[in-house]
Amino acid sequence: MKTPIVTDTTLRDGSHAVSHSFTPEFVGQIVNRLAEAKVPVIEVSHGSGLGGSTIQQGFSTHDEWLLIEQAVANKKDSKVASLFVPGIGTRPEILKAAEYGVDILRVAVHCTEADVSQQYFEQAKKSGLGTVGFLMMSHTQPPEALAKQAKLMESYGADCVYVVDSAGALVPESVRERVSALKDALSINVGFHAHNNLGLAIGNTVAALEAGADQIDGTLRGLGAGVGNAPTEVLVAVLNKMKIDTGINLTILMDTAEELVAPVFQYPNVIDRDNLASGYAGVYNSFLLHVREAAAHFNINPVAIIEELGRRGAVAGQEDWILDVALELQQKELVK
Ligand SMILES: C[C@H](O)CC(=O)C(=O)O
Ligand SMILES: [Mn+2]
Image (cartoon, rainbow, N blue to C red; front, side, top):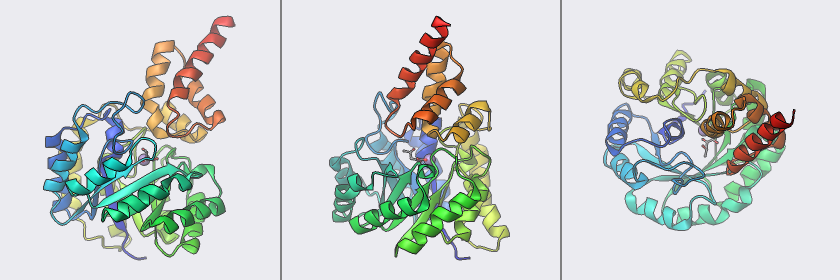
């Protein structure tokens, strides 16, 4: 099995888990350590991508451009990526990212909406950026439908397209099917991004590699939206055991996870009732903190909100549904 390109997204997916409170100093420290460990790509931006600091997505405590500045200043031989979600980010953010020294733009859309990404891939290419396409909530579409969407992104200029398990709802077989479908359809790289709601983030990532994935994601200590992602340090340890030499220094990853990342957790990333319910219902991990807030406010069981959001097929950008559902559930309770 070939050596995959590892992207650490602690400072982007992890941003959701710390309510977008990373400081420039912390970002500089983490990027410095990850670069020293020879992690090829390090993703830094608001959890919902460039320009994500909004009332709907959650305000950042620090201007993300100060975080990106620190990331670029400390990247050494690694590349810095930023996420971009059409409708949240706009073209000026892409120009600014290139000016700041960002190397790769990761354009994330719901997995049936690749067509809205065309102008952003074109702008990113014009700005000299590498490009990755993120097909979010990939569990909601069958492999052949995902492959069609990925082909569109390839035609727009994507250098790689990811199967993104945003809800942590996939199992190894369904990961293999999706990654294989993209590998058969594309002449560019294929990636996989896991969440751990069913305890399968590492297993699913190995399944993706067995199906030919070229790029994979992780976060230190698994710090990420909801229950979090495949821990980068565990991924590297498993790949070493599988005799796949990533060239990444495992000791630096373990120390950084233990000494710098563990202390910033706002809640333990255990597969508790809400996180399991979320993965089981196929609900977007970055909804979790908003669901918990609404559940507390309306005195509703968060699982009831999660299950209704799953029934309605809520996707990224529909965080406003959370309050609607909570209010409806409360009113139902009141009329009982
Ligand atoms: C914007 C999302 O947080 C992207 C992602 O990491 C996912 O869908 O998972
Ligand atoms: Mn994610």
